[in-house]
Amino acid sequence: MRGEELKLPFYAKATLIFIGLFALFTVLDITQNIIVPLVFAIVIAIALHPIVNFLVRLKINRVIAIVLTLALTVLVIAAFSALMISQGIRFSESWPILSEKFNGFLNQTITAASRYFDINPQKIHAWIAKATSDIINTSTAAIGKTIVIISSALVVLFLIPVYVFLILFYKPILLEFIYKLFSQNNQNQVGEIVTRTKAVVQSYIIGLVIEAVLVATLNTMALLILGIDYALLIGIIGGLLNIIPYIGGVVAVALPMMVALVTKSSPWYAFYVLAAYYFIQLVDNNYIVPKIVASKVKINALFAIVVVIAGNSLWGVPGMFLSLPLLAIVKVICDEIEPLKPGGFLLGDTMPPLLKIKLILKKSKK
Image (cartoon, rainbow, N blue to C red; front, side, top):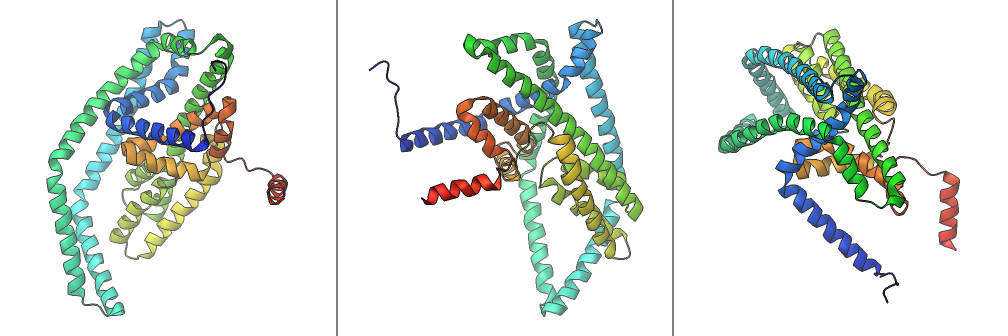
């Protein structure tokens, strides 16, 4: 009958969900060159929106306010890029010396290991030479593809500011469109979701910037105290890599340890670098992230790691940076819509009381 609600068995619902997810991820993969810069632009526009509103409240024309905000943002990014390029040029000038020292250290390590494990060192050297040759051949074959990727990346970098300007300019139309998608009865709920989504993205982006600055400062200070060369460059790289949760911190410590091994007389300096970075990670994980980054929406570590890996598989490095903001938005939506609240609880890190768990287990046994 027309008034009756269509009820599907569980296996049919599960099949439809899996087919829908497969279709969604296929579309996201195929259209990534369009979607990724657009998502970046939306996130950046939400983060810059309070600055635009502040300038508008000062009686500045809205278009001029948007242009001034974008110009200031581009200027900050350009100054930071200039600093990184200057430090990178200095590092590249010393790269042949570092490479020679690293090869000497590697040869010493191979000789010691071959004596300890009773292995012919020539076999190890032959294996390393073969692996290096394979890497070079693979890299040579990928040069053309890399040039294409870099060219498309440059196009995207020019597109994102245009997208950000248009999103900020047409914000009233976009918001009105979102409200018109839903009935009048759901307007309050939609407004709450939009407000919370803006607050989450803004606090998350600002928190990430603060976290990157603090971690980069701590890294640089630790490396300067230990007397490690190129402390500023390596410290900033570590702060940027640390934005990628749970994975970036592990990758970030490898570079300063290698520099310490080839520039210092004692290999203990590499251990000191590892210990310093471990302490900084403890401070970051137990104070900076909970107090600054995750103050609005808390995502548990399991889904954070899974979504970062999934983002990398789907969109590469940009997907790793976008994965957590998008997951936070999904959690906000789940928390506001009654049928989806179990999903929001699953994504969060609020542990249920132990007594409640025991009662549930007792009921399940009866």
